[in-house]
Length: 305
Image 1 (cartoon, one colour):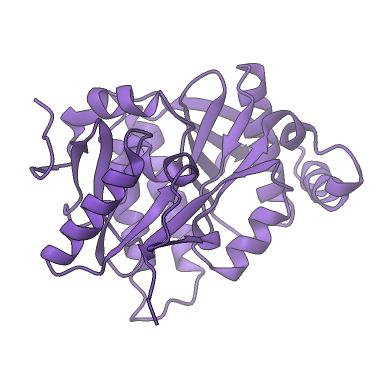
Image 2 (cartoon, rainbow, N blue to C red; image 1 turned 135 degrees about the horizontal axis):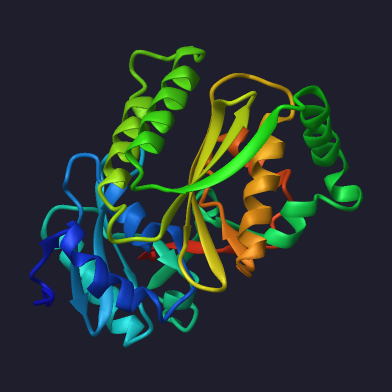
C-alpha cells in the first residue's frame, strides 16, 4: 500500500510500478526516474509518500547528502507546497523545496513564496536524430572528432546488450575502474565512490526496468559504455557514460552511435540529466546543443523586510 503523507516509506525496488505509474503522467524529469531514485540513494535514506495524489520524495543532495523535500504532480500545488514547507521546518530542515519540476510550480502565485530557477539542476534534453548524425555547422567539431576516431580505429564495433547480462556488468566495472585510475582524485571528494556505488545499485534494477548498455569495442576490446533506459516512445534516460582511456573522438563517437540506436527505436528525445553546476559537465553537455531543458526550481518563503 502506498504511504500517505505524513507517513513515508524508504525507496526500494518493490516500489517500481507504483512510482512509475505516477511518473507516466508527466515529462520524465531525471530525479524522479525510478532507476535514478534508487541508484543515487547511496546511504539508503530516500523516502517517498503521496500528498494530494502528488508524489513527494525526501531526497538527499547528490553531493552533500543533506535531506530536502520535493514533489511531482499538479494537484493543489499551492496547498501541497505550503504543507511541505511547514513540515520541513517542523522536523528541523530549511523551509525550502528543491528539484521542483516546472509543471508543479507553474501555476503557483503567492506573494509570500519565492520561486527561483535552479539552473544547476535543469535536465538537458537532446533530439536523438541530431545527435545520431551530428549534421550541420553547430555539430562540426563533434562530427570531426567522431570521424577522427572512426578513421583511426577501423576495428571498431558497437553493440547493445541488456543490463542484466552478467558479462556486460563485468565490462562496465572494468571500464569504470580504468576511468577512475586515470583521474587525480581529491581524498575528500566522495563523488567517484558514490558513482561506483550508484552503478552497482542500478545493476539491481535490471529485471524490473528496460535498461540497456551500449558498448564500443576497438579490435574486440571493450573501451567505453553507456547505460540507457528507454522509458517510453518519446524519452530515453542517459544514466552513465564512461570511456576507459582518453582517446580523441571516442566519446563523440560513442554518443553518436548510442543516439543512432535510440533513433532506430523511434525514441525522440534523450534526457542527459543535469550538470550539478560542475563547469566541465556544463560545457560538455552544452556543446551537444540541447533542444530543450526540463527546468527545476527552488521554492522558499519570501523574506519580509
